[in-house]
Image (cartoon, rainbow, N blue to C red; front, side, top):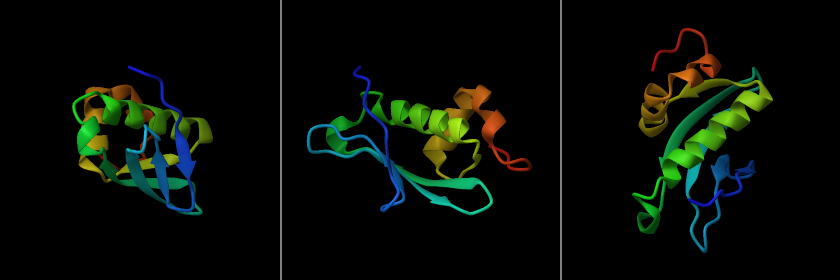
Length: 98
């Protein structure tokens, strides 16, 4: 699998990959308290089943960790990824369970 560049599109409040003319994305809400809420993941149908959604989540979690933000994973896909990769629980907002 290719290593796609993660884009933090702050105007649209989403993380993105640009693959050909398609845009897999994770939508988010950030607040001024250093929290980020991942609300929705979408992978275009043509790209489904290729691991692109999981790669997107991985890169987003790395970015959140690098920025020192506290994560609230409201998106079921992101929460499922964290259940499979519990090392990411360290960036989850205290008191929030996945």
